[in-house]
Image (cartoon, rainbow, N blue to C red):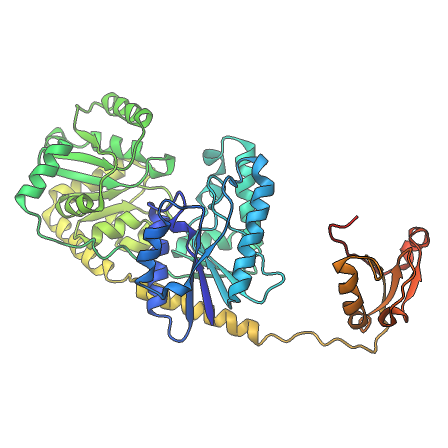
Length: 496
């Protein structure tokens, strides 16, 4: 089977986020575990800034000839209604390129791209015999639409994506929580939804950190010595305010010994807002540090050196930072909501993210109770081994094979040509009119006649033997008698 993986996720606005990492990890592992299947990657030529380096990287995984570039258009983001016609043209080019490959399976790594960037996601296999699949990260904007959509037009674009998703054959969820969220949507009730999980990059691991490396990083980030760590976003579901509040009610001696590092990209507006919140919570300057963006190299150092990793999110598709921290041997506590318990899987290390006192109490225990801390570290070691890209890829391929086999063995309906045929009006250019469609009609109509009682609607005199047996009527007669037809087929191109 030919398996085509759309990897625009490595080019879009998500390329440096968890979606980009997940897409690359899974695509790489599918190629590694492909057995006799032929793997293709699809890229978009409009993202020219990184396409050469991306092709070079992907060429180390699969043969260069299997990296397919389709010629799209720029300025096609769905948020701008003026671009809708360009978006449609790009979608047709996308479908054309897929048809050229004739895959048995098409998997899209990031289906919700294209609203704000030039990604093209338009799965329509109505006229092709391939199965469609999409990675389902989460449905958080659907669940919390009031918090995520301030204007009606953006909400409509997102809901349109949800509607398009109902046409896909199957969804590969990244957690059982995401799978359950999808099952609850009535429109997905007939979909094959499979949880395949995921993995963190293998360079997140326990390492020896030199005093020089740690001293330089600590100095640049204004870290005093010991620290509690969180990384992720700062939108409402990440629950940062409650984390700060929980930290602020720890004993003063604990706050003095352990700073709180909040690691993520942050705008100046959010930095000012959260610094103000820290001050209002009674915290001193540099008790809480907002680091901004941190490279993976430095993230590994911080994961390895933190005294505690806390993840208070209200809702996650997977919760990748939790697994990264576990890989680096950090003691981890987290929210008991959505997918986070699936990764941590240790009841004693979970808290209600809505309860400031519960978060604070568990933080305090993890920092001061050495026996409990050792249990957390042991749990990290046990849990991190459960996840692997190979396991996820094998599950994905097995699902592809199952769906492909199911499609291949489906029984097509038998057409009884002896039954009474339905009456069809055929309205089209016809010979001797100078139109390619006229010539095409002359070829297709004798075959089409096997299934319908066809009457040609035309004002001209047809003079070719292939069509002499067909009854003809004028346009005016058709207009007066159209209700007598079971079917009407309008067949036209760009001629007058």
